Length: 381
Image (cartoon, rainbow, N blue to C red; front, side, top):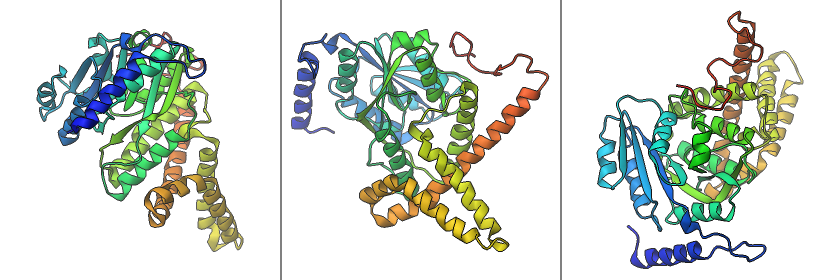
């Protein structure tokens, strides 16, 4: 619940922001953002209590979105009934097709000029609508924007804190002129979204459908902004199995496939040069450790590699230290190096698979990618 004074203050702030937006450099008035309508699209599959918290936070938004569209993706826990209780428009899908398909369905059902995609396991700040609408009104050439998780993850266990703080750090230190998109809290002009055909529905689990769509946005010459002040709270509880399974199977492997398809590795977000060097050093450390039994210099080499890994990633470890203390930061180091290990492994596997496909007689067209988006950029069913 929002206290009366807080909500009243937010309403005044929203009214001020929406009523008189001025360019920070020239001071000249620009078209008022109130002319832009916004629809929130939420795919949900058995959302549970986290989904209730998500809807509660949206209900408290000032000003409220014009539409809240919930796409029940074959759920079995009656999440759609909860959405109805909050006054959302509900679209029920008979079978689970994945968040990419669900978001596309919600986008087609929307009438507003702006689409805001949010996951069912986040809560949003009270001013999320005014933040987004103001940016789009001030920058008519902007096609899409996205935010990040905040630095106060809801789940208290170590892995949840580590994973979400890591994500927060990566987004907060990335370039504002983004080369990708983020579906957990990402907004886009509806016309642009529909023109490009939406998310690629091949991804039938939460995966890299947003990253792939961001690549197509940039290929089409569209501007994408990472708004670092736009932060949402992640409610997800991460465990060992869920973290490794998601990172390896649903993120690293398909992202490798996308990188090889596009033949482009942007120096941003998780693909910064320091991250790629760290992945290589992690394998060097593994080799040094294995060869220690017969190579006297192995331990010296291992020590040098450890030093380089710590130096390359020192800003991240200092961030962990500031946020959660020294012991927390120390415990993140092996998990972070494990992340580099399986990311590198996924890339190697992806390269091998790509080479095998290129030698296959079925792949008769040079450079063809089986199962990829069509040349028009449309998603394929």
